[in-house]
Length: 496
Length: 96
Image 1 (cartoon, rainbow over the protein chains, first blue to last red):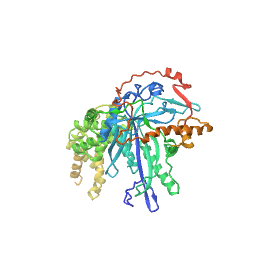
Image 2: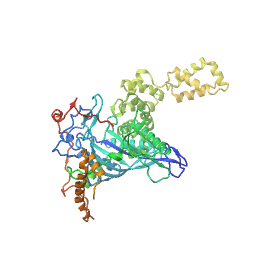
Image 3: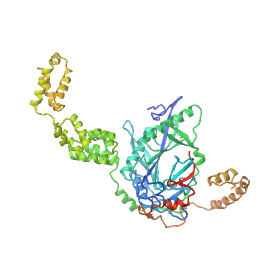
């Protein structure tokens, strides 16, 4: 942290003669709402259908059709607004945003402009040093998505697939309050977690269900005036958002320091090259001539309706994390990881309910071995590969001393591969921990007899050979000797 | 309020209309008259008048249930398209 001019400066800001640069970032996140049908028509929204099989006359902009608003899209937008403590507009208005592009058949996108459905909320992010920062959400509005343009294999032509045209989007616009690429990613992840908790968006970034535009500018630290911003369009991964912003910040600083000026424009991030490049000058293109859509009446929401939606809100991520810390004695970090998705949180709670008093052990296993195995196989927790009760069965055997933590990892691998229970694996492989003092003593005596030289050295004062004897006995017992008992017995027997 | 030649050309570009340069002065005059006509509203006292988003007072947007009611009829709809291939509408190449 550079606090040179009294203003905190992000780690990825550069330097300047006599001062540092401050980065200013605002994000516009587009979350596709998980409705079955489109926002203004009864066409399906399912991903991956053959081209244009889910584009009806309304989506195609045929003459004489009228849009009719989807009640579920409205309910989802209200859910989001309430979850971030925003104002839900009792009256909001749909507007036409006019521009020409082949994947926009009507020549305008139906959006909301002056009177959006959601205004003025906040989200809290956790910074790397553990401190918290509130990020303002200026507004969230309902709008329709455009179609897709395909350029490959069409011999100098562009193919248009309008299946996505009319899919409901919630555009979530932040205040320009993020000061580094990391903060922007933390905010984006927070929104991603929230929309999935609320079950209003599947969050699938590969399929474009959750994507973001980043507005980036730099200014001398301490300056109140915003620098000229560029907009990086359509970034659909957390890693790319971070890289794109870092590149753009460095580019702008270098440009200004070498005497140039940042031009307000739209830029695209090229993941292969790790750089942004100019797309079009926004000053020229950005004349959308918004006006209220005469085909749609103002959307009016009753207070009772808003309260009914509020009553249906689930436990939200921040509240769940706070409860996990208090109820299960977890660190803020662990509670944050375990509540990153509702599925993961539910899984953890199911495990810890099944092995009471072992909430920390359960947290370590869910975040450690289980997360690693899921990652390795490219699976989600919801895939049900290892039911919570089965992992709990393994943890119960660690808790009651049947197996050590080390053996448990072996058992886990077999359980993961074979789908059997911990008890079956332990029994069939004879992995029960040896807790019989006599058996451990016999193993120790055997090892001592086989390593007279090391024993003599130990007794002559070479203390660190203690570990050697632990290792030898563990080897002789295939790792099954109870570690605490083994230690105690070695301490008694080795000195002679 | 008189529109400039550049403004008229800008409006034509946004509407994707091709204007014969010889016609531009005529549009400057006629569009300026339209803007002046609308501009009379500037003289009305609108203090305390809420902006109106729709000329149907007292009516609000009706909502529809989230149900799929449309079938795939792309063969029929695409009969109007000048060029299609593999279900895609074909247009001159657009790349940014």
